[in-house]
Length: 555
Image (cartoon, one colour):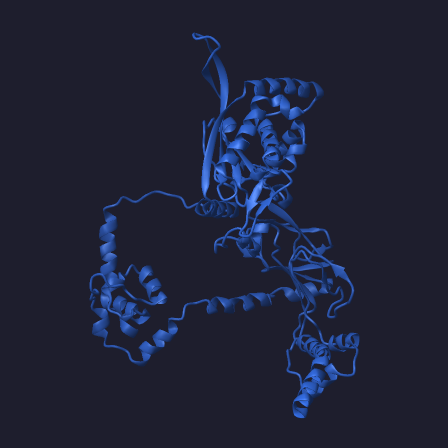
């Protein structure tokens, strides 16, 4: 019993010293990571780093070596140094582009700053995977549209370095620190530059510019090994083949496997066979359990199989006349549009509700308002402006349609922000009119015209298209489309497709009477996970009420 009590007493003393041990280990870690050479700590250095100094003294002593400082793009505020080589405590700032400060360690390079491709659009970041899976052909990439500074120019904070083409717009990239532009690594027109990839070098002193004439960023070399690690592991199988190579006649003679059996081949062998139009069924594998490996494909090609396959393909293609075509490069906005809409149709259960709304009173009110606008020197109000206003008021009346689906909950928005689809030469844009339910018709019309012009000029900023809760797409007025069904714009839950108005014959009051009226068909596409059919019908009823009685929108 006495022995057990002594053990418990010793353990309790150790637990009391846990916080002290953690502080000492942290001081040793700071010293380890502050050295650019990453030398291992000796026992004397570790003990001196852990004992005998206050926390501030430990950081000061451990910061005597040069410390590489990395400034990464983030929304959080970071405590970093404005002095080369040493962290300064208590100084906070936030930045909007990625840069890495480099230092000379045994080389002729002076202190410099590597400026990386910034993340200027929410879809240029990997956070976009919360909405849809990240495609290899998509973000995070950007293109250099134009350099506004040239090598040797002096730069200051706030000055525009270059124009970056994102997936949705062309955005100006500003400089964060004062210095001189020593080297441009990505020239104008460079495409698909990954976020964080170094595009330029700046230095503090003008005389250091010439030292970066043949500079190559270290990040390029560091980014290469991961690509090799992602390669498939067939080389191990090739080593097995080299250790016990089979006779050549067995690999060169095609012998199709039994019917109904699956052909097993390594990924590298499949790729090589696909590049050379070699049917895997014509090759006998010599790998483990008859698996086809790279050596089998190479032996088959060396034995004349390539010529036979080429002759067979020539005979087949000679019967088909050649097609004349042009390959158009895919822009970033086209890639994003394709992936978002494919994701929407594959994962969102769509359903569609269509209703015809009489627009005679709406057109009459529009004529009266435009006469007032012309008299006061204002811009004319379009039918689309009235549609946006009616949709916003209907969302306020039926807020269930102003929602978004997540895996854990349904988020219902209190702001009514309407995205308006705008077609341009570069692709489809959806700028947003924020708080449309609280704005007048003239204000909505001005904002829509301004946003449409910026979209056509490819000068939209992220705040011009972010934060939408509902989308309106109008193909009736500009193109005369009678009726269509739009694809829901994720993460929104509904989109309204507006067709063209047409005159129809409608029954009158008497048995032999008839009248003419203009009707505009509209179709509401809904996400059934968020909006039930009855809720969608209720929203369309409210929207139709505002269109057929437009005076109620002015109340």
